Length: 159
Image (tube, rainbow, N blue to C red; front, side):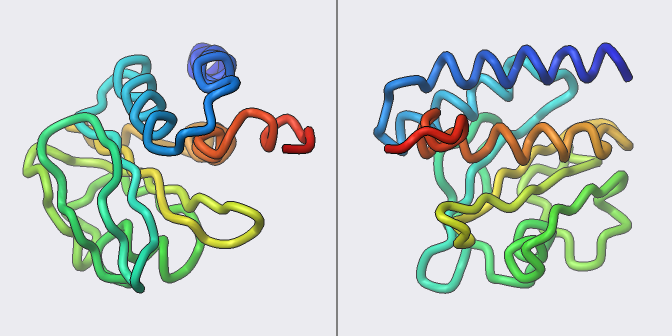
């Protein structure tokens, strides 16, 4: 577990440095999706979904083509949007209503993203292996995901 914590501490520092000073949301989502996808092991997808028009709409991502629209309450991402709580799914085949955007995915983690205390969307990570994600992933991804809005918000400075 210490190795995983160290990997995430480095990833958190890299994300802050990479996005420092950039205010363009699309650029930040794109670079953060790429950073996560390339730095964490055993991923086959890293996607941002934005809550818009009462559904989740695909944003920047890395991996194979992804679902573009997800209804609230549908699949793992839609469940997170409905409950506003993270979901760690060790085996997606056991998740009722799972949406298989990539048939190679076996486990998944989805964390909600908030901006100014309002639900904004989700960060979705998929793995081609079972049991990839745990509470360590959840803890760090919940810190890393909102960096898309700017490093200043994360470190508590005024915008």
